[in-house]
Length: 287
Image (cartoon, rainbow, N blue to C red):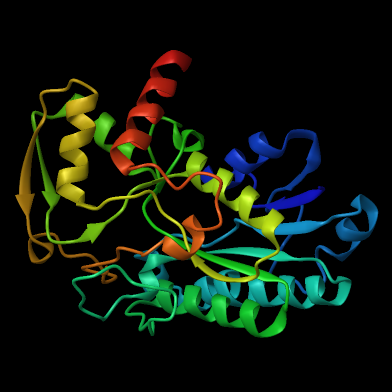
């Protein structure tokens, strides 16, 4: 299977490039501007593409409050353009979305795909709009919501976009960190997500799916587990969201029920603690 990977330099995109190897056609932002209609048409024709995976996105959650038009252009109109082109060429489109679409709701049980999303930020509005465009235009679509991604591509010295790398860096600089403890999520390894996506594509079971590692935690308990597994003595001080205000609101509960996807996979997603252990082991061996 010949797969086109958009956003190939990001955490998930780079993992997909590694996974598909010679069967992958990787295109960066400099090579393809998804906000321009038909930007991938020539690539589809010249490379005999069987499937397109859109891992490109605007992910600056707080900055999106100041530039909502740009976030919408990349996260909503970009996927719309891809869906129109893929539909015309009858090529399946995989589009990556976010748990942030469940912004305003309160819940005590993980969200299922049929639950009604209500976004509460410019970023989450743009992501939900992108979902709707893809699902309404492309019959052969796989829209995948995920949460808390981390991968080796973000190991650039800043840990930008990667909570694990940020904690390891800050933990080496400080004895104590104040971390939010009232936002619940499921950290997800891009390695596990990439494998799941590759398996789901082969099923041709098109639709909307939730995809995360198993289990749940708060950002504070995630940080504690990182320091525990990394054998660091950094102390975590648990705080509330109100003690760390941000420009964009975050979901207080964004656990996703992944039963629909897991039923189609060869092996279900591992627990987030096990995925973290593998990430840290690979990180240590590569240093």
